[in-house]
Length: 234
Image (cartoon, rainbow, N blue to C red):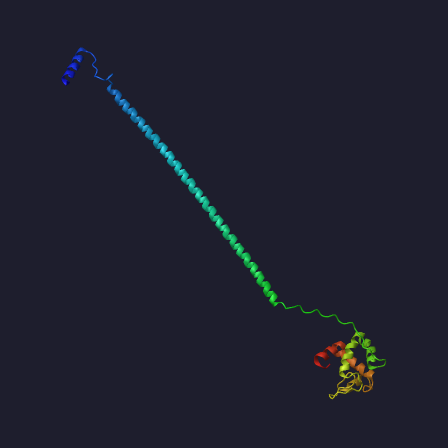
């Protein structure tokens, strides 16, 4: 069979006729195959380059997304830090306010403890002067009539009456074992001679001397009576 095919081919070629292989429609020039291969190779290379560019864009997009996410994370972290610091500052301010209130309460409690239990009572108003009843011509009546000469009002008589009632009972001849004598209980009684020679028997002389003594030493009968109450003498 192979010999027959070769004979046919050779004969056809010698006659100058085209010889076709069974089943092949036409013969392809040798150069056409190379161009097709190069075209296909170029297309493949272009596709590869396009794929690389697409991959680069995807990678760049992913990198950008990562940077954006990182920036958002950083910003969120800054917000968290700022919020934490603000909360801590508010807590410290609240602690300081509570401490200040506690200190104020403690100071108020200490002040209340140190304050007196009750305010001292207000001084009672001075009672209206009441003149002791005196008999006309008595020693008390003589003393009352002489108060103005020493610059005192009749309100001083109550103190004078209490003073000399205790000392001598307004007796001209009252005598104390210590040597005090008369209504004002002068010690010794002879001191009253400066007010008159009749000092031993005259209520007027004794009262005059006694009022002068009180004026010089205590300022007033009430001053003398206060000393009498405190010390038991004047």
